[in-house]
Figure (cartoon, rainbow, N blue to C red):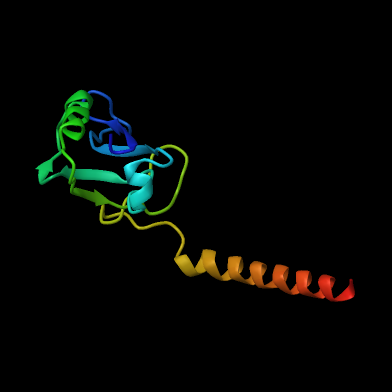
Amino acid sequence: GLGFNIVGGTDQQYISNDSSIYVSRIKKDGAAYLDGRLQEGDKILAVNGRDLKDLRHKDAVELFRNAGYDVSLKIQRRLQPQNGPVGHQGDGESGGLPVAAILVPGLALAAAAVWILLRYRQRM
């Protein structure tokens, strides 16, 4: 397989009033995991050029199973990890935190932790 699970479809909507197909899980050491580009929560728009719009879940699964060895996916990246339904870039809605709002405090904490560790090691 391709190493990931999907949710969604016209008969199993993951998000209310949205029959799109989403990546629900990346299997560790599977093809998608090893490739590293696909992420959980991504919306899959097309497989090998075939649009996934208005497909039943089982028909989408069949497309993935018959995709072949070289697979091309057109995806829409989620804005940020969430529990439950995900937000998407380009859907007309703004929201989420800027990357700097997450990275700057995280880097400051990491730098403080390294400084404390180095000071502690010098005392030993």
